[in-house]
Image (cartoon, rainbow, N blue to C red):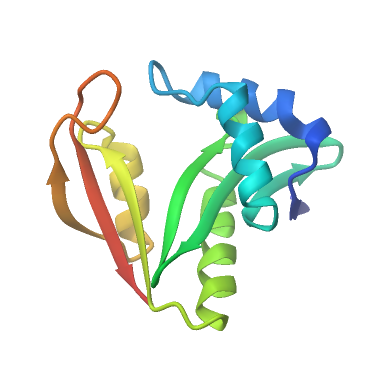
Amino acid sequence: MNIKLRNFQFPDLNSIVKIENASFSVDAYPKKRFEKLWRLHSKDFIVAKLRDKIIGYIIAYPKRYFIDFDSLAIDKKYRKLGIGRKLVNFMLNRFKKKGLKRALLEVKTTNKTAIAFYQKLGFKIKKTLKGYYRDKANAYQMEKIL
């Protein structure tokens, strides 16, 4: 598969929201949140594209001395093909070149698939954040030293 990565463009918004809503239940970001993230971090909002179809995205940006992985989702039809890994590694390499030495993210403690995915990429569970999500679910804060 010839997956292209590029910066998010505003016409991508509806595709991103559709992927987000299919990927996350009560904690899916609303359209306004993506608009705000794009305004604040336009260079750090990357989409994965196959031909003319947006099939995934990542938002990760520098925050003080680390990379904050804000959100990542892949269209369900295209999961387990290495697209998420490609997006995460793209961001890790980008920010490592800028001198950042660690990355942080949060993931629901019940999301075993995502936890395993990030662990395969070298992230380790650092701590549990009680009631982190809107539905009061706990999150693991995961960290990777670059």
